[in-house]
Length: 96
Image: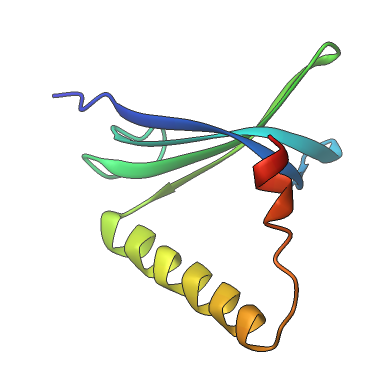
């Protein structure tokens, strides 16, 4: 059964695809059937660039356990940056 669980956000960043670097405009996160990973369900993350010149995407399909570890790792790294008083550029989020 498809879960159809999805969340989409606007994003600012970069990703490297087969044709080189591109600017990320959106990220889609879903928990559903993967396209490639040999799993019944996966946490799927698509880093996308939507532009007049075309559409580019980098995708990742993770087990739920690995996705939870990724969340912990991201939080750990950002917490360390904060503790070192390194700016997190959160003002970019407020401008959107």
